[in-house]
Length: 361
Image (cartoon, rainbow, N blue to C red; front, side, top):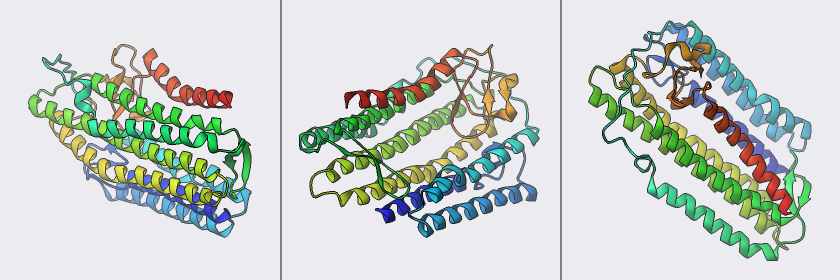
């Protein structure tokens, strides 16, 4: 089990490192860390990106090495998972803020909010196949668990330490946490798609029809990225859930180590593959939109952008979901009560699901 714990930790470190690498990599000649520079990249910009990539690579290599050199050390596992992996993330965030604050970007053009005669409906953004897969995954895995539940012992492993040692046993009914989280992730996809569909339609005075078509492509791509990502996360959770259940059956304990590693592999591939595919595509769409409108954030208030464009706080803007000025996708207007309700729900609902699962036990 110690080797399984080592592989799990190493794969987790590698997943974080590759995610940072994909974010820090230069995808456009006018963007650094997804910040629109308003000009071509300079040698200094490239050097800044290279420093982040080198630090990230070194920290990732160190984390992977420590995972295997001290597989039985809880202290090392804690240091790697709670401290080391956040070093490149923090460095990237600091550099992104520095770039955002140092760039003198053109002001956002006047707002051209328009009521479309036939605006795309929520269903226009969603993939029927991916949503069917989410539903089948939830129903199918729940059916398998219901079949297994009467066969499970009174106590099953519920938590492992950094050495792979079981630190807590619990009732099998606590595993109802998993279908709750599966349903939450599926609901989150629908909520994000709803947010995308509700984003204000702002048209550029130059070539408005092409701009609208590109915006529709951008919004659909954002939703597809989230759909694929959360489906992969849910597949990983199902592997963990049913794998632990099967591994708790008499004579099947040897399956647990394999299941833990397999679930991390599934989640790693399911996270990195969509990032590698959709980030370049979304970057190209952002570039084409900027070429037409002169800004990624058309339809927002210039004064509402704070911290160089990281946050949007505009009390006089009724919009809740707005296009990001830094990064890819959408952000929230933090001046709207709905933004805090949304964030509170994302945090509190999984917590409530966990408490209900423990209460059922």
